[in-house]
Image (cartoon, rainbow, N blue to C red; front, side):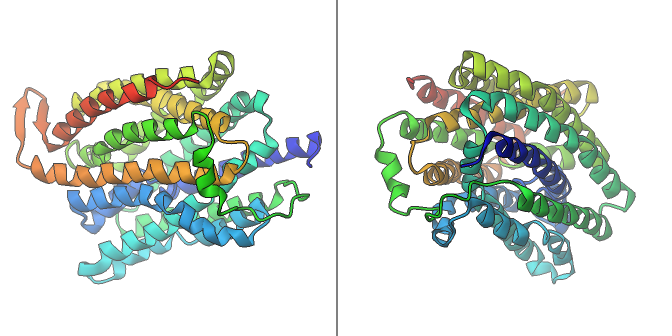
Length: 415
């Protein structure tokens, strides 16, 4: 067992590791994609439907977590498992830029395959990492600690995103530009791996990290875990009908450059960073589930903002502030902390893997269907002053209506 000073040291190193990982994700989009990575695939020549495939690959990489974790039976150390797979995935992101050199007919598909490989290795460490955090962060301080940790990593993301956007515009938004930012991200990926190597872990347990029989046993345990997983998956499915099209719309319709995209991301990130500790303390005081339900309803209604969106910064900057406060900070933190509360006492890693698999399967189908919806509404175009009703906004309208309908299943749950 780790003593209190070792746990404190582990929590401190975790903040450093998270900061390095944040820079890696800001420059590469390795944590579920970002606007720069969307721009990369559009630059390669991806169509709107191919972009829905790109967006669907992100949750698909987590759907196969239980299968991927079979190999984890050989590991008795969460730290060693995480270090092994991050050492493979973090430093190699620069390879993605090299796919541009391939023949036109295959470059996009090879790029998607490379991206999917990296995302799979990135996602497979998520469940062991969550279980590891439960060992070093005591329940009574989780809201406060993760709020502060996310505050720090949020402020680290701000200059990272701005610098990445500046470099993309400076070097021409092409092969050289993407090669540079992906290479910088890969360097910080190496530093992230080294930080993980320094972190403390309870070495007293030598049992296999994954118990395969427990993967399905956790679903039989009485409690809210299974019902919540199903209910939130329905909401996630409808929310992901958005696909990647908010970012695609900003690039293709609003014609934002990367500096503008970086500015908007920075504004959202600053708002999220400031409010992370606020949501953490509110969750500790009033209960994470109560705060989660509040955030879910506001986030769903907030997506109406994408339906009404116009290119002007006087609209987009305040809108992105609210996105950061609610979607990034509120829903992200309270859902994570609530999940820590309700996972079964045994088989935590297995429970996290099942949860990630089911919720991301819902996200996968939502993104795939969004591609077909875009094809269905491709010819839609109706202008009202500066606002346009097009395929993007038709998809957004369907997503908001269906998401509001699915929320009732979450609100029916009882602790």
